[in-house]
Image (cartoon, rainbow, N blue to C red; front, side):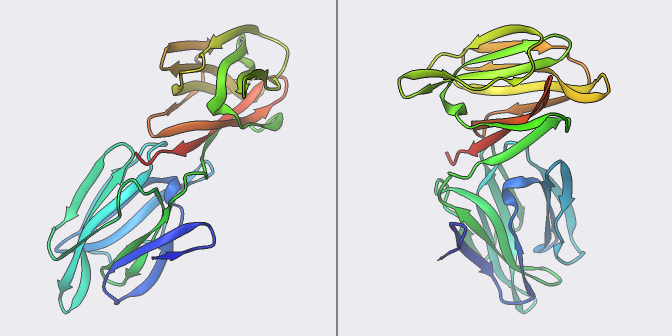
Length: 292
C-alpha cells in the first residue's frame, strides 16, 4: 500500500505481471462499466462524465469475451471491489470481479476460482483503477480515498447565461426561498452558522412569487428534481421540486423542457452552485459520497 500526492492510497494490483501498465483516475465520475468475460476477464472499460459529455476510457485488455454493461446512477459511487486471480495459459490473470457501490453489489463477473482479493468496505471510496493488460486483464488495483472531504460535482443543468455562484453551507440549510413564475426567478438559502440563522445571497432576479420551504434543523434533502429549457431565447431553470425527510415541496415554476433529477441516496449535498442573472440560469450540486 502506497500513498499518492492527492491523498489517495494505492491498493493492489492483484494478478500477474504480463501486459502493460494502465491507470484510470476518474472513478468518481463513472456512469457505466463494460466487462468482457470468457474463461477469465478479457477486458474492462469505463464510461465517465467529462462535464456534461459522456466519454469512454481506453479498453484495458483484449477484444474477446462476452460483453456486459453495469450502469451506475449519477449519485452512485464505488466503495469496494473484490475478485479472484490465478493461472491461465501459463500466465496469471484476473478471473472474476465484483463491484460494490453505495447502492448495491454488481457481480460476480467471471469464474470465482484461484486466489481471492478484496478492497475492504467502509474504508472510503474508490477514486481510480489501475492494473496491467494485454490480450486479457492481467491485473487490477484501485486508488482509494480514505477521506471523503472531496465532493463530487453533479451538474450543472440549465444554460450558460448570468454569472457563476456557489453556496457551500448546504448541510446546515434550514429554509429554502424560491421565487417562481413561468421560470425559477431566484433561489436563496437560510442556514445555521453556529446558533445564528443566516441567509445566503439571492441567486437570480427580483421577479416571481416567493415561497419558503421550512426544512427545520433535523431534516435533510432526499431528492431534488426539475426542468430546464428555453425562455425568451435563453436556457434557464423552469421548475424545481425538493424532497426532504419531512415531505415533498413543489413543483415550483413550470414543468416544461428537459427534466433532471438528483436522488440523494448515495451521499449528502454539501453545496449548491450554478449561474444566475435576471433568472436562475443553471443549478448543480456538490455531493459528498458516503462509505456506509
